[in-house]
Length: 138
Image: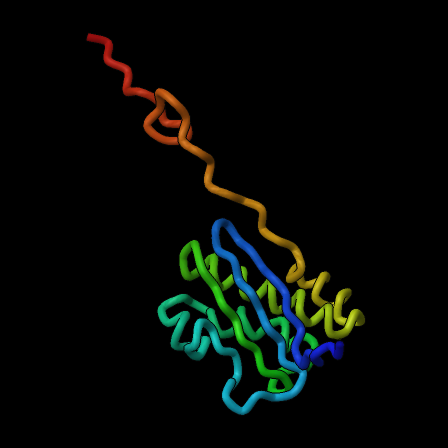
């Protein structure tokens, strides 16, 4: 049985509850212009998020792979900002899979580290995670 050739590299990025699956195509795909997120261009999808385009393109700019690759991203969960950070992490991981010499460059810029901060869960007998009942003297 012949294995199908894969002309892409996939990676996963996460932040809070947002998860991004990233496909980095080794040969330029004509139907994907720049970075495509959930079927839309990245600028259109992350409209309203400050510095979204720069943050998403940063891994590509650092390794000088700007217009040489096509990127497709599928994100779900969380908010737009978390989805953006998850997509950037997934893209950086995919670039390292493509060429391991990119690892020190991306590591130095902090692009390969998952931000592990999560929302603290609500506790029993409290209004939220920490806020307790209001004290009433009388």
